[in-house]
Length: 251
Length: 229
Image (cartoon, rainbow over all chains, first blue to last red; front, side, top):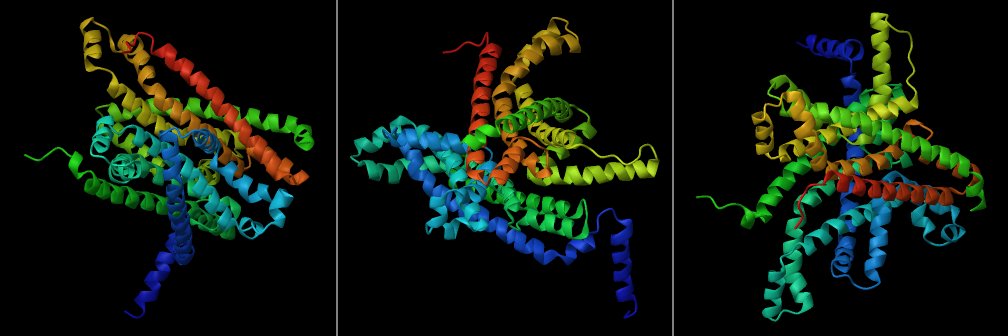
């Protein structure tokens, strides 16, 4: 038994190295790199979703209620971020801002010379733009009767927003927002182009280190698929919870 | 800004490549999307599951990962195949072809869903009426299904096109000399990356704005005969 243990392992290893099209043992040996990569991806996605989500709430309200001036500014912001590639936005912030003397000499440079901060800022602004559109649509889709009823009950603007408008709008926005989260996970891969070792970054490092064509990318693809799978599952459950009142009643 | 103007021919060349990649890959994507939709809607189990696997796999994985995988892995696989069969010597796929094939392949999956949804939106009665008139499958497709398929597919097609146009920026990571690559190179040479990326953004905005106008025109054209309230 003591003899066979290592030899069996050796056999698997030989198979992995020579016969199998993918050297899975090599991927397994670098599990910790992929684990930290997954950590980076998750961190980037969650942090920017939270920051972008918080930012998008007031912006979407400004758009939906056509607040003078602010409405136009938010429109321009959303148009700019939705009409250009995320990669170019990231390049502009990470590589571009260093060109401006004013930025390099201010305290901001401490933040803006770090790839991680640049990526966070870029992703947050990007998802804020997309989420603003989603929330705006949801707010505008609220049946006017509900707001009239709230007014008739004597609720003030703020109370109305807190009790009626936002709860209804956010629930309605849930399916579209789950799509946005998946886009964010998919979009986050561009972080690997500014030296961040996220999931794809780990795959690229592995491939570059051993001069491989598939292994790192396949491992990354599988990890991203798993991530998206779990997110969709989680959102289905969440939707069930928040949309209980919309489901057809069981007989 | 003077520097940017001096480099304008290079940027415009890059813009042209971006447009060319986008147009070629959207054509491939539509082609694959039609086949995929046919596969998803057909009665054949094999076609069903192949198309199903295609769309789930492609839509579950980020495009840059797939691009790198198809670009590096695909090249190696082709060469391994050439080695094994002896049909061809060492092949080097150029960046343009690789970009078009990977983007077309990826967006084919999204187009599959577009066309499947559009087909399902055609009222069943129209197809039945066509059959009742004695139209064969071919005539039915050309006269009844196709014009309406375009009508229902257009909004989603437009979305896919805009996303695809922006995705082509990723091909610069593979090394294709398109808009982003050219402006990165120019910006690095002149140490004016901000100006160049700003111009790049404006060019993308222009391209999306022009596409918007075009899509709206197409939409009007193909909804001739739709009654509006």
